[in-house]
Length: 104
Ligand SMILES: [Zn+2]
Image (cartoon, rainbow, N blue to C red; front, side, top):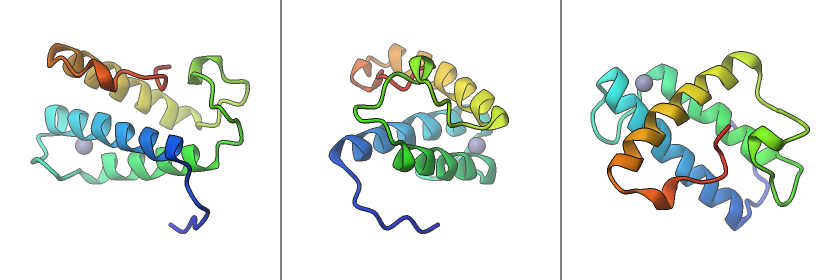
């Protein structure tokens, strides 16, 4: 998918974290191997990246406080599940650094 606009450091960081969350979820739930994503999760990651790249708000508010709610309903439900699942796991592994404002 082409979005050639420069990404800000803030966006890159969010996308990195998003990546970690979705990978953690996919490994735990779908049995993917390290570094791999199933089709479903990889399309969710693509979707989430694009939404993040297009977010017009700067600084981006917490998603739950956002006036836009840019995610479509199905993706929103899915990402919440990912966040809840991976959030707990990352918390258990002491990765507090990754628990950030994306939480719905
Ligand atoms: Zn998956």
